[in-house]
Image 1 (tube, rainbow, N blue to C red):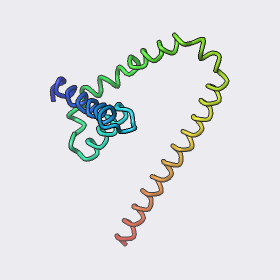
Image 2 (image 1 turned 180 degrees about the vertical axis):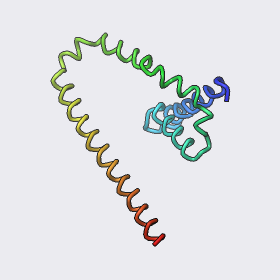
Image 3 (image 1 turned 30 degrees about the vertical axis):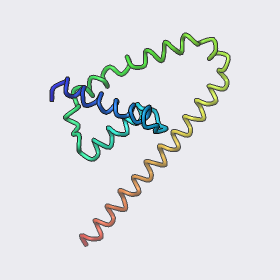
Length: 126
């Protein structure tokens, strides 16, 4: 599919997410809603990965550029952040540990589900 069409698909989904947030009042930020919608559309095969692959690959290859504006914003408020460094350090450590635990538990859950499915398949074949 051509790049302008792929861009239109992705931006339309983003626009729907923003609409749901700003007009409908869904209490989730529009960009997150857009990603959830994209995930739903991909999982339900309404949109196939090939339909947005060129633009998606471009965005992934240039991901560092998307972090530039927030990085500059952080630099401009650097003095305020430096005054809060102990709190920020503790938050980073705690949130990293929570993320590690949540990721590990989620992975274990999916592995056990997959093993149960494989055990049921093996029982049926015997």
